[in-house]
Every structure is written in C-alpha cells, then in structure tokens.
Image 1 (spheres, rainbow, N blue to C red):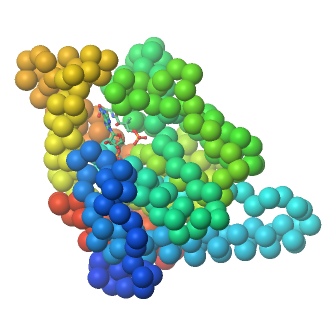
Image 2: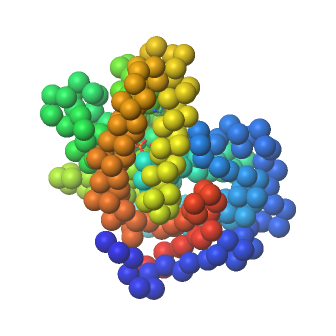
Length: 307
Ligand SMILES: Nc1ncnc2c1ncn2[C@@H]1O[C@H](COP(=O)(O)OP(=O)(O)O)[C@@H](O)[C@H]1O
Ligand SMILES: CC(C)(COP(=O)(O)O)[C@@H](O)C(=O)NCCC(=O)O
C-alpha cells in the first residue's frame, strides 16, 4: 500500500526541530549510549532536533486522548480508570526501532515524571523454535504466521482493561523465546510496544490488533541501507559471540567464514527483506508518524499523517 497523495505532511529536520521545546534536552552522552542499539547511531543533536519535538507531539496526542476518554466516561456515567495510551513502533528488522523505543521511554519518563511509561517488544510473542519447527516455518521467523497473534492481542486487551498483563521474553542470543521468563505490564499510563508487526491487522481475530494502538510510529529507510546495517550488525554480533558458547552465533564465529557469510546473506535475502517487502512496508501508510533515516542513520524527514 503506497501512501495516498497528500495523506502526510512531511517536514525536513530543520522545520521539525523548531517545534521542539526552547530549552532543548538535558540527556547525557551516557544515557544515549545506554539506549543506542549495537550498530545504530544516535547523537544529542538527534535527541534535540527530532525526538524532543516528537515527545511534545506525543504528549499533546496523549493529553487529547485523556480528555476524550474522560468525556466518554462522563457521558456514559462510568467511573472506569482511563486505559493506558499505547504507542506502537514499527519498521524493518535492523532499522533501529529499539533505539527509538528505548529513547522515547527515557524522554517521556523525564518530561512527564508523574506518568508511568513502560516499553516492551513483541518478539516474545514469536512461537518458540520447537513450535516453529513443528509447523515447518522455522525459515519464516518474523513473518505474521510466526507470532502467536491471539496471545499478543489478549495481552493488549488486558493492558487496556487495566489488568496486570504478562509478555513472554525473546532472547536474540539464544535465538529463541526464554521459557518461564516474562515482562509484566501493570498500571502504566503509557505503554510503548515495539515490533515489526504492530501495524498489522492480526489475522482472523475478531478485532484488528492494530486498533489497540492509540498512536503509531514507523521507522523508515531505503532497503539497501537497512541491508547494509543488517550486515554490519551481523559481523559485530559474530565478534561478540565468539567468547560465548551459549550464543546462537558462536559456532558461526569459529567456523568457516563462508558459512557465516551464507547465514547473513540468507537471513537478509530470504527472510528479513521479503518480510519487509511483503508485510512490513505495506503497513507504513497506516502509521501516524514516519521517521525517515538517511544512509548514515540520521533522521532527515518526519512525516505526520493528516488523515
Ligand atoms: N543476534 C542478536 N544478538 C543480540 N542482539 C541482537 C541480535 N539481533 C538483534 N539484536 C538486538 O535486538 C534489538 C532488536 O533488533 P531488531 O528486531 O532487528 O530491530 P531494530 O534494529 O529495528 O531495533 C536491537 O537492539 C538489536 O541490536
Ligand atoms: C526476532 C526478529 C523476527 C525481530 O522481531 P521484532 O523484535 O522486530 O518483533 C528478527 O530479529 C529475526 O530473528 N529474524 C529472523 C532472521 C534473522 O536471523 O535475522
């Protein structure tokens, strides 16, 4: 699905940055390092020019949501606590969604200390490898059918109903879901959910799972740039894995370099790129805000959806 003509207003970085707060940001280089993913790039200028105006925009949208929900409750005569505001962050594998998600959590907690903001990823809802093997879809990890969409939908519904909700945890090092490990979301005001599938509809479920998101962001870049970032990250991960026998990449880090190169090539060309083209990019036109990255990972354009 291409963006409809006029559907978005696109701002270059200088114009967008003027919408930020006058006093910039007090984020420190150490905090930036803490949220930055391996091989991603993030600077204080990026925080000031792109993310501070974005946090202002998200805050305005959440304030409006709160007013609408309170007005609805008054009209209906209910005294329900306003449900958490759920923000989704989507985009390709290796585009840097996690950096954006962790940074937004940090900034929102800083700018709105009276509100509780939590961030989590959807990869915990991937079926465990044993189940992917049983279904014969091990080479489809990340595609819609590799997620337990029913569980993910129920998780988001529980959050909206104000119940304590538990998300399973995925380990990239083990390349599998970790048995018995969970992240709990309870009584938050804002929940940031990051994953390649957050703008998808959710298969045969009665409600569109994407409808549970109150606002969505899409991190966008040219596929050739993301392919290069994926490869650079792959070799950094390989180097980090060489001293850890439990890491999925350990045997690749020590074996024939061609075997490692083949894995990298296969994972991008046969799994992550087709997934981007067939299932992730087509959802971009539903995002409320699109952050576009250049080849050097810096954001040069911000598009805000008008309708
Ligand atoms: N094999 C791996 N081992 C350790 N960490 C990984 C591995 N693959 C990805 N990651 C990390 O997991 C996070 C999510 O990666 P990914 O799903 O590709 O999305 P994105 O790059 O858009 O955040 C990133 O922080 C990335 O650095
Ligand atoms: C776990 C992933 C599907 C990403 O999931 P996400 O956190 O974006 O929901 C992806 O990182 C992955 O493992 N893809 C399979 C092919 C590969 O090894 O890259």
